[in-house]
Amino acid sequence: MRWQTHTVFNQPMPLNNSNLFLSDISLCEAVAREGAGWDAELLASIGQQLGSAESLELGRLANANPPELLRYDPSGERLDDVRFHPAWHLLMQGLCANRVHNLPWQEDARLGSFVARAARFVQHAQVEAGTLCPVTMTFGAIPLLQKHLPKEFQTWLKPLLSDRYDAHLLPGSQKRGLLIGMGMTEKQGGSDVLSNTTRAEAIDRRGPGEMYRLVGHKWFFSVPQSDAHLVLAQAKGGLSCFFLPRFLPDGQRNHLRLERLKDKLGNRSNASSEVEFCDAIGWLIGEEGEGVRSILKMGGFTRFDCALGSHGLMRRALSIALYHAHQRQAFGKNLIDQPIMRQVLGRMALQLEGQTAFLFRLARAWESPTDPLEVAYSRLFTPAAKFSICKAGMPFVAEAMEVLGGTGYCEESELPRLYREMPVNSIWEGSGNIMSLDVLRVIARQPGVLDMLHAQFDEVKGQNRHFDRSWRQLQQRMRKPQEEWGRNITRQLANLATGAQLLPHLSPPLAEAWCRMMLDDRGESVLPEQVVVDVLLRATGRTA
Image 1: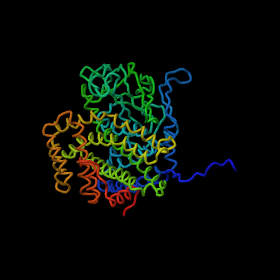
Image 2: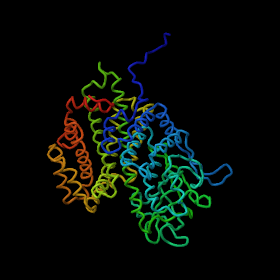
Image 3: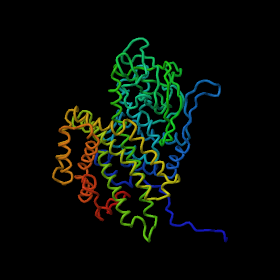
Image 4: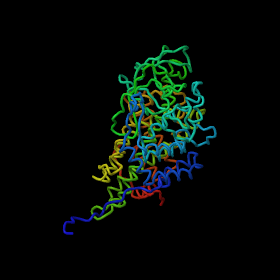
């Protein structure tokens, strides 16, 4: 054996077979605090299953084997279908079985169902993010379709609300579970959907629920295998929203032509396509000219999911980094015992403590559509959360990579996939500038916003000097908010909303450390050692 060159040692084992729920103290507390404690047992069961090596391998396989476009069938007939790896279908089965696509819309939905659904979403995001795209679009579409589903498709409501995943290429009326996609943006416009050129002409009569013929294209046609899409097109009355099924009521294929699948940076497991409408048939949702208003009703839900998804990815990155640091030795100590590494990991864990509290308070706000203050809370802080959390994700995962060093940069690690996944949530459903403009619009136009902010922030006034100073600064900026201040105002709002949750609910030392870290703009501070101890214990499912 003279040719043996070395023995492998000091190489940490990969993180698998952990419970994604029970190992996250801040998540467990937020679920209980915001009204979904009744779901804790099921969440723990989901966390155990998703944290298994088998589930993590499904996530890897779904991304290593991206979908492929099947434009024609073997006989040469136009097919326009998408073929997925079996791992994709298994992951989708789990998502639908856990009702991540429809839990709050059930007739018997319990109070706290938005919070419970958010916790399920965050856990699934830690395993595989591409499968969340069809889930979040269906989730956003269901309440709109419950009010405006055309009469020809009323039988769809039951499978939309089922816990079944049905991938068969069949008319929706013959399936046990249904998914809804979206088609908004065009080549010339992107976020400027008012510049859309797709045309819609009434076949017989104009008006809600009537049939129209669509001609045009979509630059991003999300989840093309969906049973129907909500799309925007120009009708006589202006930009309007249409329901385009994959199969028409008579069983014939609708005239949708898939041109290609997008070759994306990340989100590789999920199919995004370009499409052309060649006299496609669609049914008008709402009135002509109200397309943007209809889509915005969905947009709040999908934007919230963008923030949840980024948070889940960040949580997974931290878990991987912590697990590595507890095992890896360098310079005579485990990494977790090196003072500078403890600061890095402690700050990352503390950042996630704040995000968890903020997101699950926001989830509770979505529970109360008739409460003016809660409506104002969800309307303002949803774009603020998407802006702040989705943008924070990219440097956060990069920091986790540094903890692992070169190993974290290689594809055998989960971190490269998490890193590639991060930008999509910041771009999809409106980039950072769009979110900031939306925040400014809400401040200017949404009734009760200032009253809501005072109700939230004045309640903790006087508990922390960093919070109080930041709140005074924000009030000054909001007196005459200018567009160029939009990003700063949005980020400050999100931070203050987070601080308002941590000060009454987190231990005083941790809450003080978070406020100093996130609200004091005079330079980076060093976390006290006891704060590092406590927050790292909480991040691994333990308490002091």
